[in-house]
Length: 624
Image 1 (cartoon, rainbow, N blue to C red):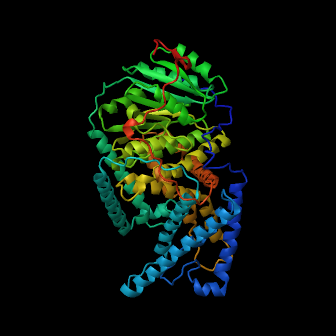
Image 2 (tube, helix red, strand yellow):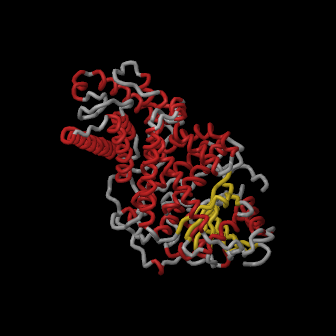
Image 3 (cartoon, rainbow, N blue to C red):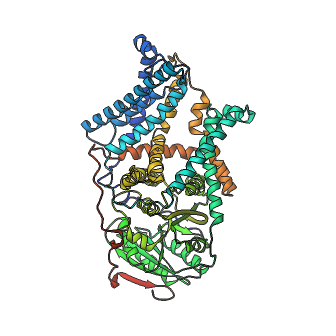
């Protein structure tokens, strides 16, 4: 594949960057203001808490712990969370009164839960002689604090209206059963290793890779996901494929101001069509472009040798509008959506479509690739190998994968029609579609052999816009698919995966403040209590994610990405900063969630009518 042209010179901003009803722009000063406020508030209030005699008599643990419990801890996690709640709320996106109410709700909810937990720990200690150590108490309340933040932001924030959806996963008992068994096995393994005095573990802990955590705590999640990954690979080997299965397929490409790269994207498709025996039809949906996208696409189609294509004009701005217009013209059973800045590998079509001999497969994705030509590209390679080449595949073992990114996604066209097309006015229309297809009872799969190169932002501004949009999508998809989270619907995605997505977003939002607070406790000269280990502070930046990244790189047989792990570590902190900005963009209102959108019966839903003939330009070796 030849080198793609230079990166776009536009501002990368579109109607999809920031859904107007759900979010607002975040000035560049706002996140630094949150961090400065947090640093001052956290440090000063910590000095008062740890040095005031009256407060010290009530809170003997040097944290807001309401009961004397045995043991000690190395970070005042409750104090950290309360300081962050106030600092974040002061600069959140809402009126002054709404922000104050939001802060009161966050602080009040968290303190009430902490009080209940402390009283329960006293009861267990006094009634049954089962003391809960302070460290374990703090770990539990820390996780609860992250959950409280994500839950209250979800409730107070403006969210998409939920859609009335069918929640009929194919094998809920198998999914929950597999997950339960793997959790037990991971717990037993972690407990067993914890009983061993391994010098290798001590060495890792001393170098901040375990962050001072016991090996049992450290091993649980990595071992759980590794077993899930192995199970997914086992499932994959049991699949029955017909390698020469090559049905006709349509590719839909939404394009907004993509003159600079659309030719490379189309040329890559034509090369892939050369190795694919089925007919490949391409629709470029020119979505309100003001550059030469239309002309460049048509010129490229004129030189097609193996595929054939058309340009469709869709004047309404928005990727969902472009996708729905393109899908309306599709007549094949299978359809692929590809982003306009994505170049697929020559074998991607034949590798992807042969899976669809299985009628229960509803959606399939691949693994992105980069060439490592810049800092962002090198860090992005490590990121995609972890998220797409490891975690996404592991999730398929329990039918828990939610998102198949729109960079490259294969669907049954009738399923997209049944679900009413792609949703407009939210972030994550691709995840919404794959999530709902999975909840209909179809498999969602990722094939690491299906590779493609998608443009990595070359500038800070572009990366910021992209990540703020991506990180909001976890909240938007959870709200949109709210019915999957209800108790009456036995959905592992709804009950477990979506809440974990929100929890993970909360953890990432507080990543940089947690490092700052660790340094405050480590260096603060008036601290009278135990100080955190420097390894525990460093592990927020390094720690377990570094070891998981190394494993994912090796599993995906991409050794050159090992050299990029230091840059990926820096990128993770930048990603945490963008997550903080993304959460600050969510509009607060405190209004109740809207009632589900009532759609017609699924089989009656159709996409908009195909465009009029004069908006279609046939190109390629033969007319479509």
